[in-house]
Length: 238
View (spheres, rainbow, N blue to C red):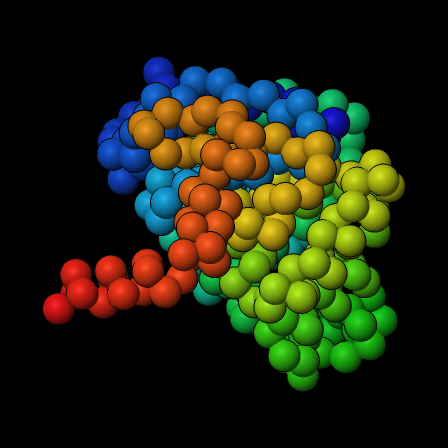
């Protein structure tokens, strides 16, 4: 494991920030990583991406995404939470990447600007590929194994079929001594075997089984009761 544990040192905080209003974050002191794949799940605004970003910055990744060697900033918006974190690390990773959907365009532009050899990125500019295609191209070609990979809502760019492709890639990298921490809403990605799922709902961060995630239950409810559910929703909206 490249990251085994994190601790938030609240006594080091000098002034309040927005994340102090997020109860799941504000109530957190320690979190363990015991599986090769860890998922962060929760409703929008529950704090999962905030914590993932803080972990990435503390580890040394660029806040807007990329590897540790990436150095660009479109607009500094990351919080100071990383300054309060202590990461308990295992062996040093040989590779690593922080991939976030919301700033992927900026990261792809940076790759073009600095003239990186596109051989490691599928042979052509990421901007010359569709959003989903460029996501998978990056992971398939740039993620080399023996690494720490942090993904923030990767399903945003991917169709359900492509999410299955991503599952295969993740499994291959895990078998090549990699560790993943992923913030996601995808019931497909969450279904991978032998992963730890941490829920940020209900004001605390708790580990839950796959079948208790909101993503699984709402998707299952909709598929099994589509007509009844839609009729009820439409009537309520009127």
